[in-house]
Image (cartoon, rainbow, N blue to C red; front, side, top):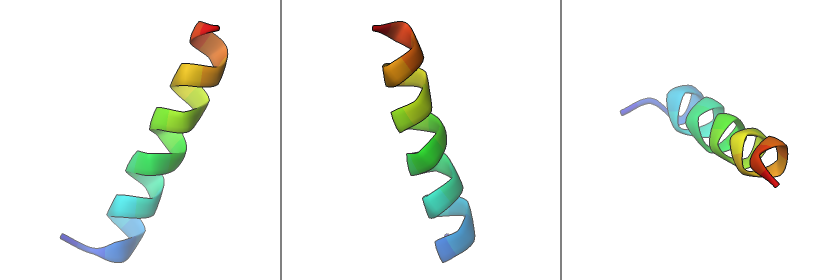
Length: 21
């Protein structure tokens, strides 16, 4: 797994959780 992919995934997850609230 690339670092970029991991960062993008983490960023998306954080954004998703933030929007979900």
